[in-house]
Amino acid sequence: MTPQEMVRLSIEYRGVLLHEMIGMETGINIYLMEYFCKDVNKQVDFQNLIIGDERMNLGAKVQVVQYLIENYDKEWGLKYISIINDDRKKGRIPLNVDMVKMIEHRNIFAHRMLDETDHLLPHVARTDTTIRFLKFKDEVSPLDYEEEKFATIIKCIQNIANHFYNHIFE
Image (cartoon, rainbow, N blue to C red; front, top):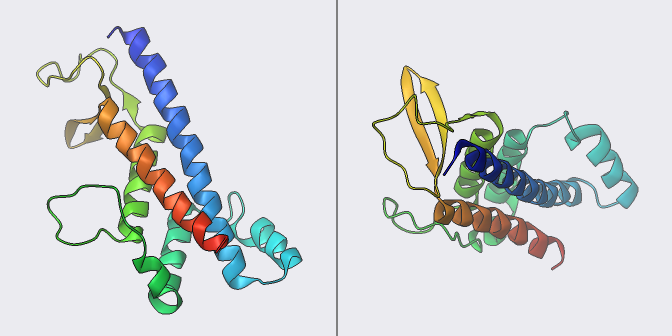
């Protein structure tokens, strides 16, 4: 893949991932609005004044959701079935774990530098359909996303969003 093709693919991936994350965050926002406010006008105020843009970040919202699930909505939280196959863990992957992992991926796509030339990591092979971001912490490390991994991440984000939307419309 040429550097220009890699840039185009990373732009497409970044756009799709950020678009899907907005859907997930919207589901979380609606869950929080409905939990804290039964009145629609108060829900709008809650969105605009408390959880709206630049007031409360997604990580903080996830922490609040996790508290609510553990203390008041356990049955619904346990209905979540992750689509991620994680051989290191036995049993189910909780909703909170998937949400935190998706935020981590979002942060990589939003903030990491694309390795479009392999100059910094020439010894680390990658396929023609893999985009690589670089992590600079003590050394340069690759953060690779091949098509299948990216597709699984998008499906996971959609799965989380659907779990919230299904709860809202129950």
